[in-house]
Amino acid sequence: MGHILIVDDDPDILRLVRTGLTKAGFEVSEAEDGSSALAKIIERKPDLLITDAMMPNKDGYQLAAELRHRPETASLPIIMLTALQQELDALKAFQDGVDDFVTKPFSMPLLRARVTTLLNRAHAIEVAASPTTLAATDEPLAADRMTTGFRELDVAMGGGVPKGSNVLVIGETGSGKSSLARHFIASGLAASERCMIITLDDDPAMVRQSLGALLKKPVIEYEKLDYFRLVDCYSWTRGLARGNERFSVSGSLDLNQLVGIVSDAGAELGQTVNDKMGGRRVIDSVSSLFITFELPSVQRFLAQIARTAASYGNVTTLFLLEEGSIDSRSLSNIRYLMDVVLELKFDDRHRARIVTMKWSKFSRQWVSIEE
Image (cartoon, rainbow, N blue to C red):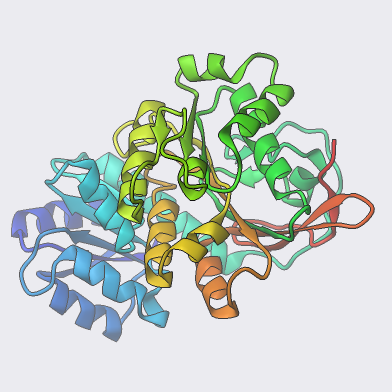
């Protein structure tokens, strides 16, 4: 079933979690603070860590951050237990590398379900088969998959992109990154999924026009139903005082401010720790972030967004990156956060291929991403 390490300075919590997980068939070990937990993890790495937030000697945030900086524990699934319930507490947890966030008091069945989900995802990475060519199919998508907006790409992925994936989309200017992103969002809206676009390079007015051309009703109708939100950073990057969007960055932007705006927009969609409505997001230019901000700040921001995927109800996010815009080391750090990496190109038509995909079999063949 798996080996789980529980870290908490409250013996009652340790006993409760140990009993609940042991009955479910898990092997359980314990630690009373972050320092002793780190020593135990170095001695014998568990399959999953459950840690309290506030502890002596080394708190849960510090423990998670340190584990993420160690190559041998960088991918260790981490669940944080805490009595704190503010959204900022969850965001800090995700920024420090936590995969899921459970507030006290909690139900044991819920915690077991979260443990099982994270372990299944981790095991899927280890047992993922080598790439293979997949036959085309007209079968409907599985419940845990969503369409990219392009049938051939869905087939190459083995039946669509797994929900809750973080997807890095790399390509030169004109390779079709924006088109893929808009088809991805339009497909979500057509399926009544919650969707968000964070614009840094694309004019919000043009984004709305392009989406409207793909949908059966105006974008504003989806906004009224709380299915769509647009976060406008484009106006700020172009030096405008403020854009026309309700969620629009103004003044001096820092990435903490942007996190707050994204969080506010997501709250209206139900993309939160409590509501877990899932859905889709697009960040239209990771490249612009690297141009504007220091490397460590951008990497923390991207990690913060990526690690909310599961805890917000399996939100799938596309991160668009201009090919050649960052150095190879920075690119490697970003790719580590991603579940899927897509490469785009344009020769006689727009095409995509899957470079990596952690959760299932896939094809490496170039496929069309044109209607």
